[in-house]
Image 1 (spheres, one colour):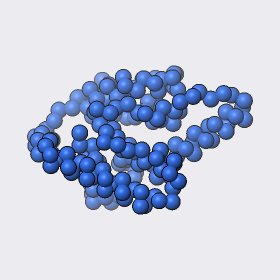
Image 2 (cartoon, one colour):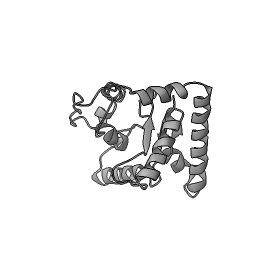
Image 3 (cartoon, helix red, strand yellow):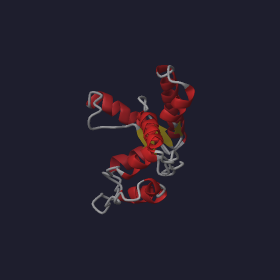
Image 4 (cartoon, rainbow, N blue to C red):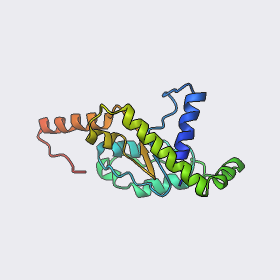
Amino acid sequence: GRLWLSRTLMVLFKKLFLFNSHKYFCINYFVDTDHLEIHEKNLYTATETVTLVPMYGREWCEKFVQTNTWAKAWLPHFPGRALYSVPVSAPGLLKKMAEKMFSGRLGEWLDVKAMETTMAYRRRKFRHIESQIFDSAFSSGRGHSKHHPLYFQGKILEAYRLRLQEEGIEPLSS
């Protein structure tokens, strides 16, 4: 229930300690444990879903895979990811303390403020992006956050559509 607070802390960590590096630390898509389903169901999101490399929290990775079985319709021959080597989450003292500290009204207020501030910043910074594309590239809510300012998804899906059209193939519907 604190996705936006967590995301904001990750952004600060990236900017302060990783000098805003995009090379090894990608924070473009967040889902919380109550909103594991990816709602945009297309070839692009299926590819992103099945090629994730989980690092931690095997139980949530397994639940994510179970919740997003729709991706197999797009990529039926893609082998499933082996999750046995992903460590099970074991909250340490710092995590327990932070969750306790932000579990009440203060945490709720901070999370909502972080979401509102982030969305207002995005709307200002990317005001040149047309509304429909913005809504897809920055699709966000209390349980998910998407940040794709270059909107590769749209470019790739359009190229795919044109390629299928050239070949006379009817695309799968999302």
